Amino acid sequence: MTTVTLVLGDQLTPNIAALRGTDPADNVVLLAEVADEATYVAHHQQKIALVFSAMRQFARELRAAGQTVEYVALDDADNTGSLIGELERAVNRHQARAVHVTEPGEWRLAHDMDSWPERLGVPVHRHDDDRFFCTPAEFSRWIKGRKRVRMEDFYRAMRRKYGVLMDDDEPTGGQWNFDTSNRKPLPREGLDIPTPPRFTPNAVTREVIELVGTRFGRHFGTLDAFAWGTTHADAERARDHFMEHALPLFGDYQDAMRTGEPWLFHSVLSPYLNMGLLDARDLIDRAEAAGREGHAPLNAVEGFIRQILGWREFVRGIYWHGMPEYAEHNALGHTRKLPWFYWTGDTDMHCLSEAIGATRDHAYAHHIQRLMVTGNFALLTGVTPAEVCDWYLSVYADAYEWVELPNTLGMSLYGDGGLLASKPYAASGKYIQRMSNYCKSCRYSVSRSTGEKACPFNALYWHFLMRQRDTLGDNHRLRMPYRNLDRMAPEKREALWEQAEGFLHRLESGERV
Ligand code: FAD
Ligand code: DLZ
Ligand code: SF4
Image 1 (spheres, rainbow, N blue to C red):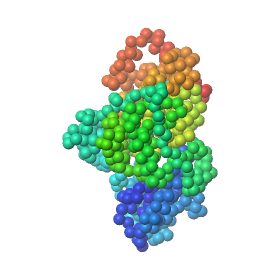
Image 2 (image 1 turned 45 degrees about the vertical axis):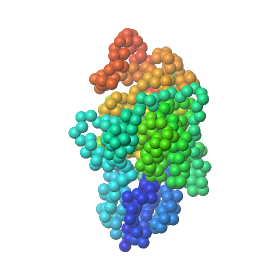
Image 3 (image 1 turned 30 degrees about the horizontal axis):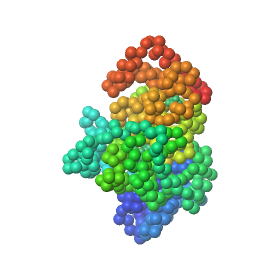
Image 4 (image 1 turned 90 degrees about the vertical axis):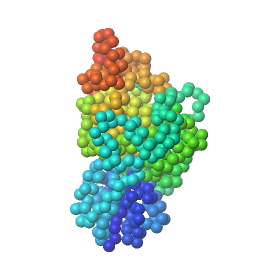
């Protein structure tokens, strides 16, 4: 009688909790490619290929390290298509006395696991996933009774607790946050933008790409440009490249966007981090060391660390604290359908076609594209949060609900009524113009708000403020825009309203916009 340890596709970490201390003579490690996980949303084809290829190569690594491993491939004849089905078969095969698993990242699966002991007829030992800095229980203690829930307060607590970027009790450099130095647009010329390493698919990946093309060819995205690393060694190479070439300017250009430049100075490490091919502590240590050694300035190092120790941990805390109700929030009462062009990139709005095009080709878009282009447009046009969340969960290689949902529903759509963000990230075309060169190649004119050529974001922005006055009018961070709105001549307000209504009508009727 042995035990079975299930390792999920985003738990590809050699010392993941459930694997610690297992005895290969008395335990079988199970990894299973299953249709259920590949289709609970229609994931981007590159995401499925990345996960399957990395799972297959991780299984080899585990075997080489002495573990007894069983691997179920998607096209194995007896594959039941579900994790519980594969566990049932493994438990029966081995007459197993117990199952071990590390807590999953998504509520849907955690909830399903509650029924596994009964369905399997053996105990299921669930180990906490300790790859994070803050446990869900610790976060719930932190949030309880707080009048103000802000990432910045949480982040400072994490910095103090783990002694990251601290000189005794003081933040390194005398300041906790250098965000205001991180909003530079790119200079027109004279700046070399490093391309992150692109990996030529190896034999395992090629086989998986073939499989995914056949089985999931109707899912969003193309496989042609697949260039993700699929092993720990690949991910470490991508990490080292980032630390060496992009981190020094990560801070300055964190919010910038440019036509034809999908990556800029971003790390493009999130898929590896979320799957367990990289370790968050290691990334933070390396960034801190780069700062100490004078390789990267403090605004870059702090900016990068804030994303991982601050935002990433904070959104995970919000997710586990709020689920399952969190997913249902729709504080702004939005009901519009997601525009069809989110699946094709077929729009004359150049900023949107750039962001969606990168998403289709690379299963990646950087944060400002997600927040201020696709997210902003969905917010301004009032798309139902659940539809937007499904899109974000489907289209990115790094998408797992624990991180996607709070970012989309909370940060981007203000669907949680301000728990995650103190004001909606709503902006007119002016913001996009300031932070990118997109508007230069657009059929719309960013300087116009009304008329056939007017940038749609402009009138939509004022329309959003007007129609949400009851919910947002008291938000002190929106005092200025509401004041500007009130100062407008009534005819101007009316013209903006009509312009936006006309655009929304065209959008709804499926006209190309
Ligand atoms: P960098 O800009 O290089 O940042 C470094 C790392 O910090 C990232 O790899 C990531 O691990 C972490 N990070 C940065 N911002 C955030 C954030 N807001 N929340 C959590 N971690 C962060 N991130 C995901 O990992 N998965 C998602 O499904 C996801 N969905 C998003 C949806 C929306 C609407 C928005 C606005 C953001 C979303 N993010 C998501 C956060 C962020 O956009 C991505 O983490 C980032 O773009 C990944 O690219 P990068 O590795 O180049 O990041
Ligand atoms: C994302 C993903 C995909 C596409 N396929 C699998 C799979 O076949 N088997 C598996 O164990 N995990 C897969 N994953 C990752 C899971 O969806 C992930 O573990 C859960 O969403 C919990 O975070
Ligand atoms: Fe986007 Fe408007 Fe600029 Fe066109 S003009 S790229 S729609 S912000």
